[in-house]
Length: 227
Image (tube, rainbow, N blue to C red; front, side, top):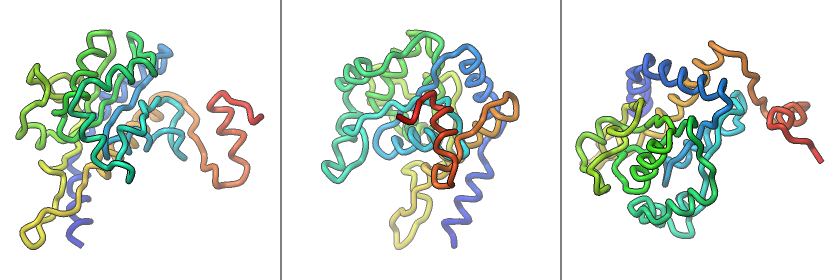
């Protein structure tokens, strides 16, 4: 199938050296007991929970999660409205305590929307390291929706290119574009970060809670008791 072939080609083109550099930033945060935040809106929010308490993953991530910023059948376009406006940032800063020395992995395919850009700018000023995850190709062909004219690719200390095309869809069928790729390549990058981290420092993984005997071990890794 063309889609599978295209996915494999894009994954193979991902820059592994930049992932390795990003892993060093995360390791420094871990060693200094700082938090690593994940933030995305719309479908990018899927990646903010992809590596959270995941089997084979690490207990190092803190997703910035709001149902309003997810794509739901209640109002599938609500997240699109909110990401283009900075007003929701008050809700984010009220709920989450971002601190100097933390790391923000901000996930946005275009990197152009107001909420993502304003959040990255304010947190960078506060002393957080910003890692961007998105499409370089898409970002380069659009303008910013932020008054600064900046996009995530301009703000990030390190930018992880997910290699998706502008518009995300990679197949042309009957003159229409189909089959997005950013979730697959973005997930690949995040799990590759895990590989880099555990090759350099010792961290136990979460194990599948659907295999018997793992629940207590996973709860221990989360620092929780099964009451």
